[in-house]
Length: 389
Image (cartoon, rainbow, N blue to C red; front, side):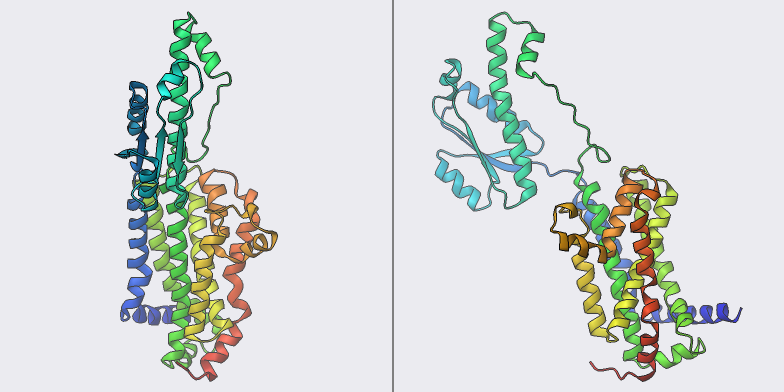
């Protein structure tokens, strides 16, 4: 009972500190929510639309103009310019005015009608992989549709039935199933890892900052005195308000994406609650561990920020972990965001049972328990260390 009262007294002391230092309000509530609204509104269309492309139509026939109109009708691309030469189109792409251009040489329609297999070309920039892949897909589609339309007209003139024409043009029918994200939305794909990653970064930084300020302001002895010298009780009381505030923010974000934006999910509410709790306590645990490893305000925050930022690359959302070199695959286990992303992907996104990814669950629990290995060092720092700017 005495321990509970001590934890409550330390928690009230911490709430007083949180209320009188504006940096906590901004880093624990304002900035995470700003990140959530920024990313989800920035990607609210799901996929990039009307990516600017150009056309070099030297044939200028009804067939080539029809291809250009079909290309402009696609949702992802928009024909913004027609160039008289390939040189001018290439210069426009180098100046980032367009991301791709379609080249239709002179005599294309004539060669099509005579069956001499004309060549049309498309060029796209992969400097931006998203824009490059999207424009490449539309340009490839329009090239295929152009040849198919001519073949269909020719076969119809020869008396082929629609079934025969369809079999000839598409001998193998392909069924595409985009599991989990059927719309191919970039918002669902990116916001669900970027925003939690930013929140986890703030959790690590605030945990290290909070301990570092006790050392800087020389209030560590007072903090420990309220726990009768027990560093475990002191840490539990100090970070109880942090866990509550961050959980509130994280739960609000989850309600926003699933209840308001209607992101797809197959997992249960219980899976989401468990994942959110592990996200918060594992991140705070790592921040405390960083301070215990380097009992310095500056160094512990540097470690936390470095680990949090590297986590975006090692999470496996942008580049698959399985495709990385073996040392990097092993290194990915050291980042909390990686385990969060795997748990989210398996349980919440795809609805598979938690047992399928129990090792990532254990890893997050391990990050939560990391402070246990450095509590004595934290206590020693509060009692004996002198703050050095």
